[in-house]
Image 1 (tube, rainbow, N blue to C red):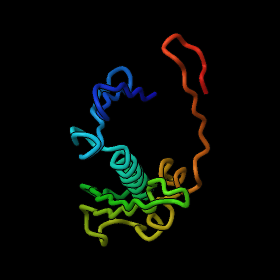
Image 2: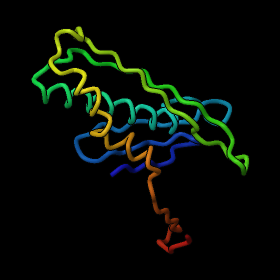
Image 3: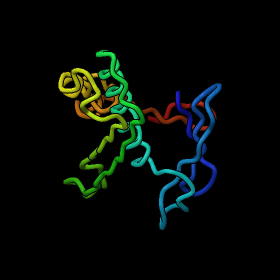
Image 4: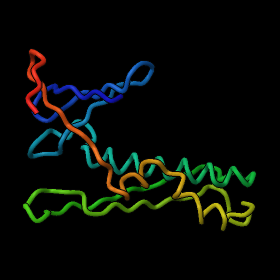
Length: 142
């Protein structure tokens, strides 16, 4: 569960549930104040985090230790045919802490780790989703 609640302008307090710290998400200026990551940043971070965890899992399957794994996620936005802004491309660069020569069967881990990533593979496939909108009194508006 994720529960964003508007604080002001485009700034939302995001509640992830019990035992997980809340965070602020905000649009960059001029819409928002940039008080937290934008939804695009959160999407790119989720993809990068999932890919890193999947790579650690794949390497661990062959009893390797990748050491400190880090990633840089960048994205591009563009306008679609209806002139609406969309994320058009995400690039994730992952860095291993361990030397490749120290990791058994690294070639096999590299060949399969992306398939373990729930987030990036879901984005790649195009995630079906449903949206509803309710009035403050609970009436379903959409």
